[in-house]
Structures are given as structure tokens and as C-alpha cells.
Image (tube, rainbow, N blue to C red):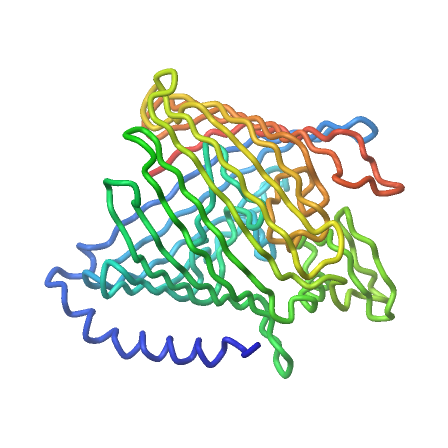
Length: 398
């Protein structure tokens, strides 16, 4: 397969060429067009597992950013967030480190161009652009919601309507660089997704999506763990000496024999769907399913998440409850990008997720989430008892 780098350069050059012409389309000065938004979350998190010591901690997450519409079709965005620099799928900062200062770094930095209502392209460090099914809980099977890819994203909207049976049909492409190697081959994710939205009745909509994603030189991504202890690697790996290290739990490389490559490739076939119905018991009802199969692995290569919810805290006094069941097998997805709060993070996990949410004030949401997790496949010598990861959140948006 051809490397996406030539395409990246051509598209980037085109975007830069267009910047001067479109940036003058707005008459108002840029500072009058700036939009500021962010959120702060205080989290109490506890771990309970028979055979392991209980643990509790307080964590904070602060995200704040600007978007600047340079014209009707061109936008620049920038966001800062807390979190450890090496952690790609969490923006949390743990309290209780002797009052040490917390890091605040670039979470997003991008430019987005939409010359028409039917086409858009963005590049840089972007928000996760893939459609994912959600109720009160959202599927994070493939990517944690806090992952911010780096590279290019394009979307073509073929159909867009607020009425009728066929509401939306769109196709999008992704070219994300994961690891740039000086003097070697870079690691990329390339792929795409098609999304179809149907109006089933006056109160119900159904969304369906299918996609394919391939990690070019993806096996070499295991080497990133050698210098970054924040990455959760639970896929099986081969070390530099040729030894096999079987995954199923977070692995730690040896200083004398570091990781060389993953055992499996990652060629992912993805399908998902979501149903939303208004006015069920006076509230909105949603149900969804998310499935993935890794053609690059010979076993433990499937993942399935299903979820449902009733209600949504959209206004003061509103509430919602949700239930999901998830199974992410060991080689089904790249472990250090998937949901980091399910068990101890990574793959080879399964179990239910229970959530409740209430909005007492417009900017404030209170949430309770319990992840009830066991290994999808028991690992000898590891604690296989049920792990409860309980989170109590207070989240303020501004």
C-alpha cells in the first residue's frame, strides 16, 4: 500500500495556498469572532477487587480552548488540557503529589476548511472525528474519547436532510501519523467510515456506520512503550531478542530486552448502529451496538459493545440512566488507544458499565459510573476476580 505521506503534502500545500484568499472574507476583526469554551471535572475514583488492596484517589481535568472562524469556510482551533504528556488517552491529573503543579499542554491545534456544505477537510491535532454510537454512555471500544489524532481528516456529505426517511449519508477518510521515525518507516493509521441516518418515524432515528482502518507499520508501535510508561500495552509483543511476551494485562518492557513489535497486525473492520426514540416514558430512549474484527490477528480478535439509556441531563433537573456491556478481546484493537477507564485499561476485558447522571444547574452535571470488569480470558498468575472501578464526577462546562 502506498504511504499517505505524498497525499499529506499535496493536501497541506493546497490548504496553505487557500489561506490568504479566504482569511479576508470576514470584515470583523479576528478577536470579535473568537469563541471560547471548556470544562472542568473533579473526579473521585475508587478501585475494589478481592485479592488486591483497595485504592481511592481524587483527579481533576481542565480543558479550555479557542476557535476562530477566519471566514465562513475556514476555522482555526486550539485547546489546552491537563494530563501527563505521555498519556494519549487521558487528560486527568491526580491530586496528592505534595501539592506539585499540574501540567497543561496542547490538546488540539488544527485548521478546518469547508468550501461547501458537502465537503470539509481538517488537519493538525484534531478532535476524534469518527461517528460513534452513544446513549448516555458512548462506545470507546476503538478509541478513548480523549484521544486527539494527528494528521488529516476529510468528510463528504452526500445527503443531508431534517425530514424524510433518508436523513444523512456521509463518507470520511482518515490519515493519522502515530509515530514519526527519523531514518525509518513511520507508523500511520489510514482508513475511512461511511455513516447513514434514517428517519424511521416522527420520533425515531436510526444511524448505521461501517468502516475500515489499517495501521501501516503498526507492529512497530510496540517500541513506543519502551520510552513511555504511560502507554498501556496489553497486546502480545515480541522483544528484541525474539522472545514472545503474551499479553492480556498491562505489560512492562525489560530494560535489557525491550519490545520490538506486536505479534499481530491491526487491520480493523468496524460496524456500528444506534437507535434513538423520543417520548419513551416521557424521556428519550437510546440503544446502540458497536463491533470490530481485527483481520490482522488469528485469535482473540473481536470486540463487542452494546448499550442503552433512558433520559438525558440536557437541562436543569434532568437526569439519565444507562447500562452498557463490553467485551474487548486481547488482539481486537490497539490497546493504548482504547478506553483507559475500563478495568485497568487496555484489552482482554469484559463486563457491564452502569451510569447515572443528573444536572442540578445548567453548567453543572453530577455523574456516577461503575465499571464491573473481569478478564475476557483468564491469565495465569493474574488476579481474575471482578474489579469495580467506581467514579463520581462533578463536571462544569463554560
